[in-house]
Amino acid sequence: MFLGIGRGVISLLLVTGGVTQALAFDVAVNAPDAVADQLRGASLTAGLLNTNDDETDPPQSIDILGAAQADYSTLIGVLYNQGYFAPEINILVDGREAASIPPIDAPAVISNVVINVKPGAVFTFGTVSITPRAPEVEPTEGLNSGQVASVTALRAGTSAQIDGWRHVGHAKASVASQKITANNPEKTLSASVTIDPGPKLQFGKITIEGGSTVREKRIREIMGWPEGDVFDPDVITKVETRLRRTGTFAAASLSEAETANPDGTLDAIATITDQLPRRYSFGAEFSTLDGLSLSALWLHRNIFGGAERLQIDGEIEGLSGGDTDGVDFRLTGILSRPATFRTDLEAFLLGEIEQRDDPNLFSRTIRLELGANYFASEDREYNYGIGLRRSTTRDDLGDRDYTILTFPVTATFDRRDNKLDATAGYYAQASLTPFVNLSGTDNGVVTKLDLRTYRQIGSRVTLALRGQLGSVAGPTLTNAPADLLFFSGGSGSVRGQEYQSLGVEFSPGVTIGGRSFVGLQSEVRVKTSNKNLSIVGFYDVGYIGPEAFYDGSGEWHTGYGAGVRYDTPIGPIRFDAALPGSGPDTSSGLEIYIGIGQAF
Image (cartoon, rainbow, N blue to C red):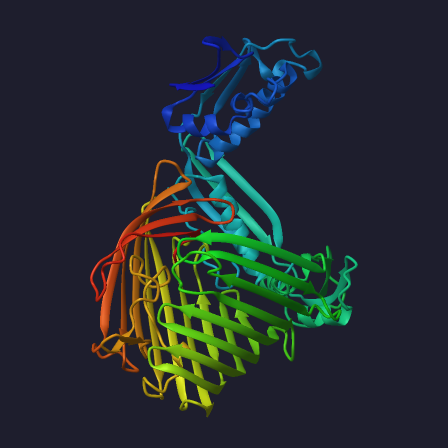
C-alpha cells in the first residue's frame, strides 16, 4: 500500500502483483498551506482512505457521502479554533455539492471528493468577559484583546472559572448566558459569558451500589466520606483513589446527584465492583547475571470481608548459571488492612525469610515487622514500623550472628510524569532505620537516600540523573551487621562493573561491605524517528568507604556504556551494554543488562 500526499491532494493506491490499481475514490483537499494539514487530518472523508487495508473492505458510497456531509461541521470547528470565523467550504462529490445530495439518493459509485476551503481572514479577540470570576482563579491565557480568537481558548477560560467556583463549594456552577459577536469589517470576536455559581453546598449522604462483598461499614471507613464538609471536587477524586488503592475493587467511581437538597447538601452515589478474590502468578526467567530464576505469588483480596489483603510470594535465583555465586531465595508473607485507625493509614504485618549468596557475602535472615503506610497525598507516602531481625552472615571476616530490633521510617515523594518512563519531575526517598542490639552487634542507625530528576530538552532528548547515599553509623566496621553494609557494582549502582564487586579491602585478600556508599547514575535518552525506539548513553560512578559518613578514604569505580529502549504497553524494554571505567578492578569486560522499565 502506498499513501501519496501532494500539495492539497491525498490519494491512496494499492500495489498488488506489480500492478497499481486505484481505490474506489480519491480525496482532494484544496486549502491554504496555513490550515491544509489541520483540515486534512480532521477530515472524516480523508480518514476513510486510511481505513483501507488488507483486512478491511473499501468504504461504501453511503459511507463516503455521510463523511463528506459531516465534514462541513468538522472543518468549521477546526477553522473556528484557528480564528477563521468567515470561511467558505465547498465539498463536491463527483462534482455535486455534498449537502445537496439526499442520503436516500446516494450515488451507487463515488469516484472522487473535492474539498475546497477559503478560510478568509484571521479574527482576533476584541473584548472577552467571563464573570463573575472565581476566587483565586486568574484569567486564562490567550483571551486578551488582539490575540487570535480561538474557540478552544474561550471554552478553556469558561471551564476554568466554573472549575474554580466548584473548588470553593459551588458544585452546580454553570454558564447562565453567553453572547458572542463577530465583527466582520474589523475581523474581531467579542464574547461575554456570565457564570451562575449557584449556592455553596456541603457534602450530603453517599449511597453505595454495585454489590461488593466487602462489608459496607468497611467501605465507608475506607472512603472517609466527609459528610457536612464544604463541597470540593478534589475530595471526590481522593475518595475514588482510596477505594482503588486497596486493590480489592475492580472499579470505583463516584457521581454527584443532579440537584442539591433543600438543606444545602449534595448527595452522591458510589458504584463499586470487586476484583476476583484470588490471584495466582508464576514466572521463570534466565539472565547471565542471576541464572535461572523462578517466582510465584498467591494473593487473597478481602480475606476477612473488610478489604484486607494477604499476599504470599517467593523467588529463587541462581539455580543454574549466572554470576551471583550461589542460590538466593526469598519467601515473604504480608497481611495489610486499609483505613486502620484513620482513613489514609494502611496497617501491615510482614514476615520474611531470605538467603543471599553474593560474591563477597552470604547471609540468611528472618524478619518480622509490624508497621503502617500513610498516604499523605497522590505523590507523598510515609512508612514506619517496628521489626525484629535475626541474621546469620559469612564474609571474609568469618561467620557472625546478630539479632536486632529495628524502627524503620521512610518518606517517599514521587512527582515523576511517568513512573516507568519519566521525562520530567523528580523522585525522592529517604529512609532512617535505627536499630537496638539484642545480641551480636551494637546499637546503630542505617540511613539511605535516593534522589532522581528528569529534564526534557526539545521533544526527543531526556536527561536523567540519579544520586544515592548510604550510611551505617554506630557499630564499628567489623562489628556492624554484615548484610546491612554496602557494596557497589551492577545494574542498581555502577553498570559495567561486576555485581557487588566494590567493597572495603580490610586487608590483602579480605573484602567486606562498607559503612558508607555514594552512587551517581546519569543517562541521555534520545528518541529516534521510530517513536517506540530510543538510544541511551550512560555513565555511572560508585564509592564505598569504611567510614560511617563520606570522608574520601574509600574507593571509587566507574562504568559507562550505551543501550536501547523499545516502548511497550507495560513499559520500555531495556537493553544495556556496559564496560568498566576506572576502579580497583577493571577486568570484568562487557556486561549486558536486560529488563523492563528504565534503569531508574
